[in-house]
Length: 324
Image (cartoon, rainbow, N blue to C red):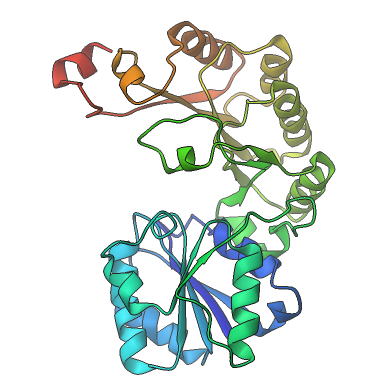
């Protein structure tokens, strides 16, 4: 039984939702009246709806992403048909930048656009007090210095079997037109001591697979190096860390921090996207030399590197993609 259920469909069982955990961690006095329910692609809409309804919530928050919007639309329909009085609240990137004719938005009672820690707590408080929220809430970004980190919301079984998603900053300074992160180009770091304390608690509890979701982890190279050194020193022998870096030539301190991991324990996604002039058309400033320098340095320091590429950018052809 829970007055508030936070639910989503993850891309796979190994993926644990950081978004839902961040919301629950910041519910304040309402946290103990809430529960998280996570599903994956193997869970039918009917089964997901049944499990949500079995908790008898007054409020159900659904995390909507590109990989789950169709499934969650069906779940929302089933919830609405079974419990018309249930308050359905949507959040997540697929509903934060305009709902248009989205079927799921037409079914829901409230859509929260943006980072929802503070807004979701307010909506739940109003709903449980009998006050109906507006149809759309444009959430103000929370003060990360005052926010509660989500590490306590990972169960021990999550840390043993799944990926623990963490963050050290939010936002991205780049304006790439294909990316939702370009909508707000402010970068807001969590206080470094709070990040180290949160990550340390996860590692102390046995976290083995950690993925940092920062869009540009190496934007502040000195800070990134400090975080990597901390992780390398605390990671268990079979542990793995994954980060995402923007393609630019790395300073020596960052490379040395990468080298502090055992070979293969650090995995780095490098957002190359394309080596052609197409990058200019999508407002991405290419740095081919920086990308090559970063990839070479990371590999030389023992990291596993995944160079992300995008096919089908404006003005690109199959031939130009194949040649770089």
